[in-house]
Amino acid sequence: MSTLLKTFSQIDELRQQLAAYRRENKTIALVPTMGNLHDGHLRLVEEAKRHADLVVASIFVNPMQFNAGEDFESYPRTLEADQAMLAKAGCDLLFTPSISSVYPNGQDNQTRILVPGVSEGLCGQKRPGHFEGVATVVTKLFNFVQPDVACFGQKDYQQVTVIRKLVNDLSFPIKIIEVPTHRTPEGLALSSRNGYLTPEQLAKAPALYAVLTTMAENLTTGNTHFHELTYKARARLAEQGFAPEYVEIRNPDLSNASLDAKSWVILIAARLGKARLIDNLIVQRDSN
Image 1 (cartoon, rainbow, N blue to C red):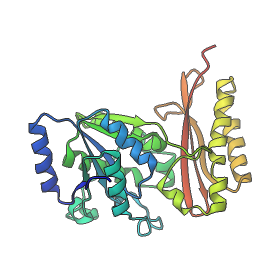
Image 2: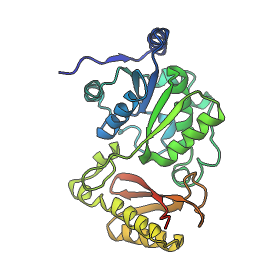
Image 3: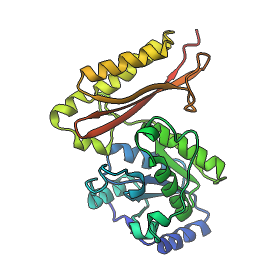
């Protein structure tokens, strides 16, 4: 039987509680989420526990990172189930602020954080303003919680890259930990949006990871014809019923892939029915 999870919705109350822990010299980790949790989120909590005395999770469906026509209104809200999962995983506190407390003057009057370079292209091109919304809300969460450590999933590779640059550029004293993608036995990256997949689509969805692994095998065996590899991958995804948005090979810092790089990251976004799926794979170059 899991214990009741301490949950705060007011910023001042959360800060008072965290201040008490700091007086006891306890270190704090933050796991930001939008709720509708799955095992991948719980891996973030488990990793956070290894790096700090206390783990704070946040659940906030951030309207600023949704574009018109996206699924903000329909995004699943499952607070009671999420609280139970977090308590079982050993989370210490949950922060569930309202939109009005995060953006008290409205979104239009909110100071925004723009992270240049790494926010552009890939999902930044397909979802204009998305990473500005992410960077802004993460900056606010960092100020609310003032964590020593924050954990993010590798599945959202571009997002983690944006947050690393944000932390570095704004001199936040926070260690960012990137947690490997958690997958089903078939290879599908866990995502809250997988819930939009029909049973038939769910059976097809692991093809995304299969395309990634085929590309990775080609790269590790010396095939550096980047354009050809991405073209064939898009064609294969289309044959499997996906609508690919992008398939790209980049250097780990998201600059254009270079032939002399020691490693690369393959990034894919594709739609399957109502679901927009993203995934990536880091590829270490064969040193032989």
